[in-house]
Image (cartoon, rainbow, N blue to C red; front, side, top):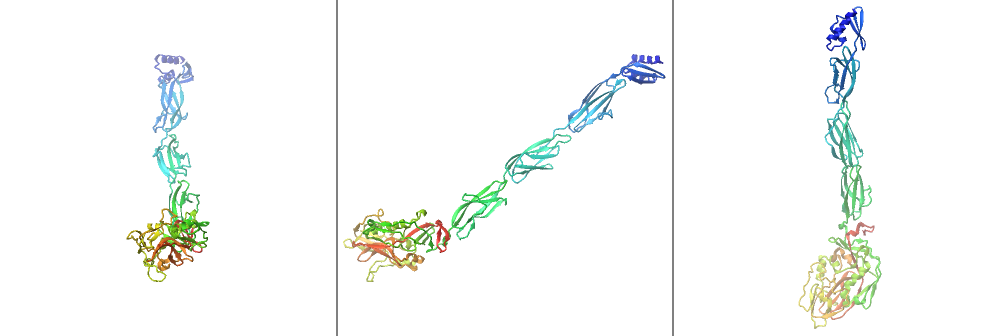
Length: 607
């Protein structure tokens, strides 16, 4: 039996077709042997009935090459092994992902992961071989798309953009939360502007997912401060003695903006300024709020005088500067000596004229000066009288700090107030002589004096006045239908003032009657009448001429308590005289100097 087994082994050596001895004995001639088992790697035990023979047969080994799949997720199914090469190829190849359970089916992979794959190769007569490799599907690059990559926002209005194609859940962060904060809902990213203007980078991230890596994209947000709308209406009105808010209808949007006020560019305060007295100033209202641009507007606030509240004869609290005596020099006045006139203190002032066109008030002292009167006369007095009156008032009753300079009352000051009855009385005035019978000429009429007569002398500078005719047959007359100082008798007649000329001349002369004396009452002067009356006689800075059949008289005007009259200086027969009177100063002040308020006594206050 032993020999028979040896013959079978010998047959294998003859007919071997690439099979192993073990395969040959098991597969091709099973009828010749009962059992074939491997004792070790080099020996087979072959049994036939009761005989067991050891046969030398070395076990063979496979050459196995395995390449695992390594790739990136693409959503497709891939064999876990890219290649499996076995030599000899006639072998049983099995796969296991747990090292225990094997199958001839190649494992596959779809999602990102890594698996251990064991390849087991077997064949009768060969040593079973296993190879373990790691197959891997890597995560793909994540995806994310933003509908916009930049934008501008104005506080407090939010901005949004959308995210698409993201491969993971979304999150977003801002690199500067003072400028902008961010939130995500679904695929909508909302940017909320902060209170600080500037640029913030918003990073939106698609999170890492089972098959994808995390992916980020950025959005640059430019944040501007919000704009506050601000409006205000300045108060403008006339003085009424009440306090008024400087601004009305102040409106800001947003309504909770902080409002502050500044007067003429000064310190800001939350208190609304008020205005009471006549004045004008600027108020700046400033609106602030966190997150908004500061805005301010400037308005001019004013309270104007209620000009219609001023009345002729109202008292005004005008104060003049303290001054010393004013000397009227004899070489200008026609007096025999210089005359020092002290200032009268404590004069009160009343409204004489309201000049709405020039926005000024003319004020007159409520009475004439007192104490010392002035001598003015002769030709010098006639020439220089108005000048001397004005200069004395300027020196003694001005207020230099206010820029207000006084002058004397003149004829125009009075004639402005002549009523129709007063003009009629003036124009119909005829001087009467001491015997009370008509001898003079009517106002505005002329009388002639021949050169060969002893009454044809005149002050030389008289030739320069209206109404004067020297060696002529007629004189042009001004319009005397209204109160207007028609003969301009307050203006200078010398080349320069004061003059030292006391010249007289003789000629054929025509003299116009300009002197008139009418009662100062409300009939003739209206409501101003009481302003012109006085306890003392005072000069009016105006010349005048009176004519009679015998003589012409040149003089200066004055008010003697309740009447205007002429104080004679020179007679046409060459005689001269000097007269005396006090003064009545007048000042002009702008409306803007008055506060609009009265004191407890009812006098208007200056600012």
